[in-house]
Image (cartoon, rainbow, N blue to C red; front, side, top):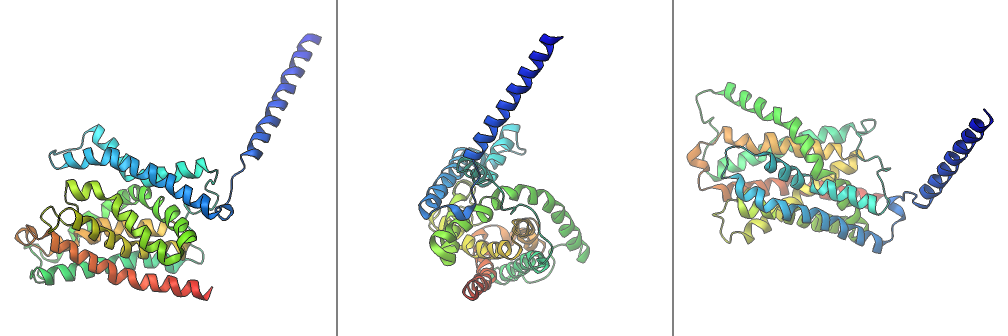
Length: 318
């Protein structure tokens, strides 16, 4: 009995020592706030983030998008590559925060509805407005008119939008991969180094360049027949991302959360971008992908520029 008590005491003593050692290690590895980083450290952070993010996209994106047009369905390996590329900004963000002991204590991933209702409302309104402008410009530029392309009339429009909206939920999950990296990490880091204007311009260029594999392999948004392909496509994507990035970053700032830009991004990708297809017959689309892409850029600038100005004025006041 005495021996058992001694052994129990020894075990309890050892556990207590282990806990103390673990606590000491935690104190040495204490998480840092984003405000505690010097500009040099922020620059290194951004470098590590971009190395991981672009490394994953360039490693898996070329194969995925080059073969996507040749298959009727995605294989299991294709899906793995797809998630590695679409989530590469989030992976870069998480890994970089871990490496630099920054953590996620800024609470940016969670919705904050109290006092931020206007930001969440704008996340829907601005994205729908983008879609409407895009639709108007496309129908005017292509001379398609504003008549619904098939005989289903208004019912077909409602059915199409309902179908597209169902994909918004899936897109919102997938777009966590982008927004967690761009709006919840890179843009804020760039703003501390280059100011608001630098973060919008440089952030938009980086975001645009990240799309290089699908821009080249499948002619994303602008088609392979664009003049000056693929350089023109990459440059135009950067311009689009500057405009769209300004809108999404404003929503992040207004709500102090990445949820609002995720909502806006998902609505644009799943409802607004396909909206014009309701009005366009196939003969209007074929061979006109470049002009359709230009309309998308004009819409992004029209929406993004006021958001940019709004952020600049708010910053000057504060």
